[in-house]
Image 1 (tube, protein in one colour):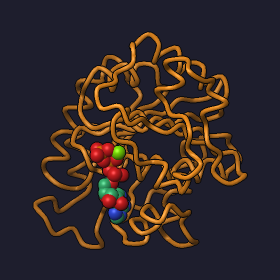
Image 2 (cartoon, helix red, strand yellow; image 1 turned 120 degrees about the vertical axis):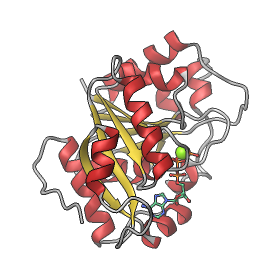
Image 3 (cartoon, protein in one colour; image 1 turned 90 degrees about the vertical axis):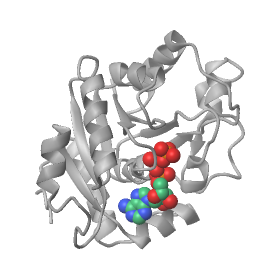
Image 4 (cartoon, helix red, strand yellow; image 1 turned 60 degrees about the horizontal axis):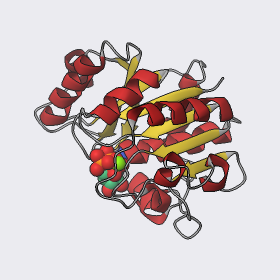
Length: 239
Ligand SMILES: Nc1ncnc2c1ncn2[C@@H]1O[C@H](COP(=O)(O)OP(=O)(O)OP(=O)(O)O)[C@@H](O)[C@H]1O
Ligand SMILES: [Mg+2]
């Protein structure tokens, strides 16, 4: 059985989709068959981030409504064992939660890792997905609102998803806001740290161009995250 990892955040825009895309690439490069499920049924974007917008025919809603099979709807990213199930374009669509849970169980049987790119917030889809997942990765940025919202996310999900790990994203070379120390982020969210990702134009540009990251500290940061998810030790570099 594979693992289902839900990528969540309290506040929107902290980098969930970016983390989902590059973490999935890193997992696949490390030999794990990986599916990224974009759980946004109204405003999809991961097909662009993963560079397959031209190949995307079916989306998540087609699988959930049984208009096609999962195997027909997933789009391969290169030849490395990575697939995307794109989100939809139906603004008002929300799947039946039992169906959604059954669908995630199917994904778990088919792939080593299923990465769910969740929308921001604490809605029912987030809570149900967290409950089915083996792990919730909470993506936070080092600013007051994101940290408070992430702490709230963690509290709300505590009963349903006891295994949570923190990814601090968009960390500048020098913290210059009201948060001066990443320990403060860890303490206030109350979630154990899995990794820290730099605020970097390299990441932003690769996401915008739908390309993989070139060798460098950004790629290494995602490789370390992926390795830790696979149970391997990688030293944590906080600053
Ligand atoms: N580490 C990073 N360095 C630089 N830019 C980043 C980084 N992570 C994310 N971004 C940029 O931040 C913006 C928001 O990222 P993203 O869309 O991944 O957030 P999100 O949490 O998925 O948003 P939403 O809640 O709307 O789904 C994007 O322009 C993305 O390229
Ligand atoms: Mg997103």
